[in-house]
Image (cartoon, rainbow, N blue to C red; front, side, top):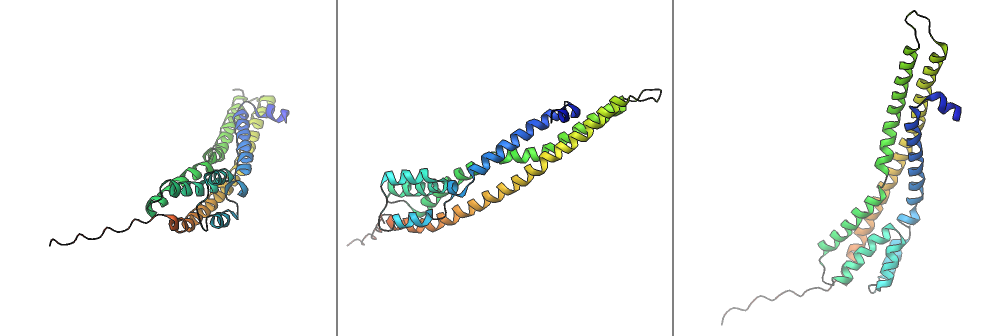
Length: 218
């Protein structure tokens, strides 16, 4: 490996940095985007069961918020109803929507960086190719007699950097698309779950009786 790096020349070092960053992001996202940490399959039914007859205690809501990202969204809605017994349905939906935005921000963390690496790595490889071509042309003497060592070095820079750039970009792009799909799936799951939970929680809202019309003057 060290011999390849030496043969590829200094243009390969930015690609090595990109490869380390991409690998780190992929491992972190694989661990962070697990269903158990984002949206456990039975969580919605458990929340509906716990809140079937009454709102849960504060400590239960706090445990729900720590359960998963979807649990944090549910906990926001429950706290809204607990703290404001007369909350309007529009305000409750807004609370869920705000919590969903925060959750989406966490789901999309580092994905832009991974997408940027996938787009930039081939360009860095192309840059290395250009440097190699410059080495190749620079190895040709004005008299026409070329330097074989410089020629071989230029070819190594051109080929190794191009190959390494593609080797980084292809997996990075594949994982980026995969993670985007997972994020979109989780987003849909959260939206559908919140839509189902809103009317369920509205049963506990204290209804304000309508104000009777003022009687006419006698």
